Length: 139
Image 1: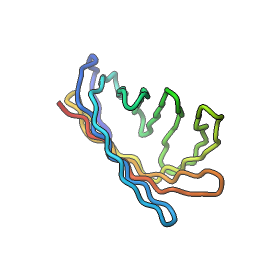
Image 2: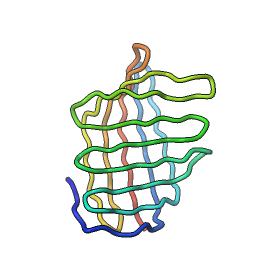
Image 3: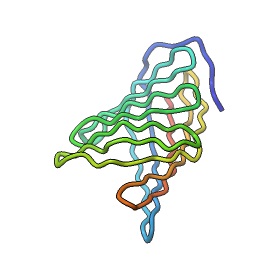
């Protein structure tokens, strides 16, 4: 589901990110909560927050999302439903080429926040990890 609005200025809200990751004989769930900056312009939404020495910037528009992580470990990931995109995972020891196949991407966002849900397969070096992410943005 997509949301439409005329725009709103940046405001501080709370973000909760739950990431479930599964691979061969591996399963993990990571949850993080932070204060985020959240704003909208037309059909675009921008969310940024800091966590564990990294800054995360999420942009949602036209049924796709981009997530940029900066810090000691960084990446620029693009999620387009039904498509596989490539990116580099940057570490202090070098970059690792990876691919992400977006299985689904849904969002319901408004001035007051909302929910983003995303499912994708992460591929690197012959390994695959299935990911499910739920992001809640609220006051």
